[in-house]
Length: 358
Image 1 (cartoon, rainbow, N blue to C red):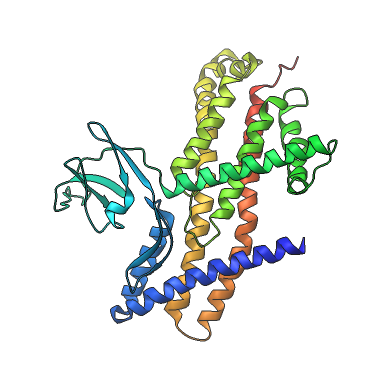
Image 2: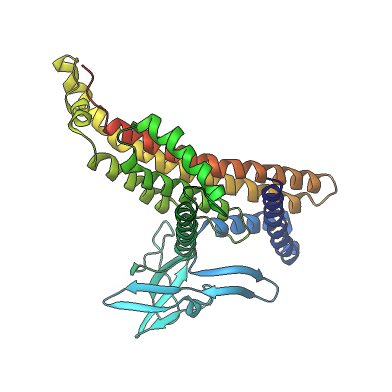
């Protein structure tokens, strides 16, 4: 237990220190711009952290304009398949030429343009250039693949240890088994039922560890914000929606469209409301996870940025201490959001399989 505590504290400290170091370099570079310029730079840094990217940058030297990391494959469909390395964009500074077509990376999106990289705008200053269909392997996709591989090897190790030691886990299995039993005994069985929970266990285990590990990865200084991406939370909520409604029994649909024991007039009135609830439930899953994780990142980065706005021996240490305390709280939130998503998913599965009461 002490080992895990030390690792967590070191992880938090590295996040605060690394982010603070990056802010320090930015503040020195833009010091002549004054407080307004520094605030704008902090806001840009936070926005950049929240967005996905086409390369995996580990750290940057802004003074030398060097970025250390590795490019990722860009996959576009524009009258045919276009595949090239994101290094052609040079972090958005140049236009990528592929088979006579020109593409520009602008505000984390790829637009089709001319050789000079011209971006056209409408009256609301929104880019009007054509956007090709984008199937690129971005930083968030790489993060999800890495977490998926980690989960595969961890659960494979747990399964092997059960087989070798007559049901007694060893190694990483000692860490996983209490969590697996917790999800089974405290989430799946109470909400779904002892006779029907097994067919949902694989999904519940997967979604809990997937969200939790991604949340923890977002606490590192790598600038990963997967669960703060609404497209990811939408996909997870959509899977819950499909599983819930495709595995539901006739009693579930009966309670939605023709509630038993309710006057006929009220059945007609309540049916649209109940049907709307079918879509509101997964929508709430999507927004809750997205909003909580995004808010945590924004608040933490903002507090770190305040260190360089105060620039005194009182405000700096106070901001650092607050950022450190908030980082510890974020570790709890990372697990809590995974738990809530899994708990509500199990609750919806249980409602879809509830038997009629006579």
